[in-house]
Amino acid sequence: MSEVVATGISVLLVDDHPIVRQGYRRVLESQGDLHVVAEADNAADAYGAFKAHDPDVVVLDISMPGASGLEAIRNIRARSPRARILVLTMHNEAVLVKAAFSAGASGFVTKSSEPSAVVGAIRAVARGERAMSDDIAHVLAEDSLSSGSVLDQLGEREIEILRQFAGGATTEQIAAHLNLSVKTVQNYHYLIKTKTGARTDAQLVRLAATCGLTRI
Image (cartoon, rainbow, N blue to C red; front, side, top):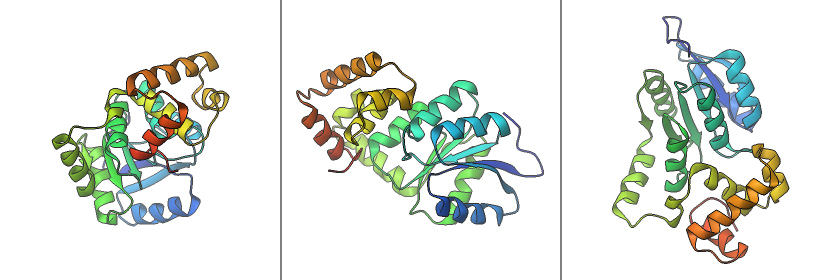
């Protein structure tokens, strides 16, 4: 991992919407100390761009076609355990926030945040600190006071597989997205059902929707 130097903080921006990337690039580069050195619109390209540019901070969305930001976080952190990753997304569900931190994210900020909050979070993550927008801190505080979600029993890989399955992906598609065998995905599917107590696939989809992983 490159060090934060006087010339500023290098950023890899990952989002599947070009207009969103363009808007945040303008915001970040207007600061003077933040420099977007590369962009990507999916998890695989994010990993490739990270290898090529070794940015100080990766700013990425959770929701992308195919493998999600969770998978990108896992792969990047597997390559570089010191990688600093800030999730910037519209999602604020506790189960996704916890899965992102479990996968290795350094911060989590929602897109409803003010640009100054996003900039501040990037700088904090670059310093090695954990960063959250106020709404995410509130969501986690509320979750800690409740009985939690049945999905808390799932690991981040299981959360990702459930998210894709509930979104309509087939076993074969999930296997391709995550570079797993079909048999491995089937085994995960069985484990997810066992851990959540779901008896049918329809129950799994409803559970995922209830917890904010998908919409039905």
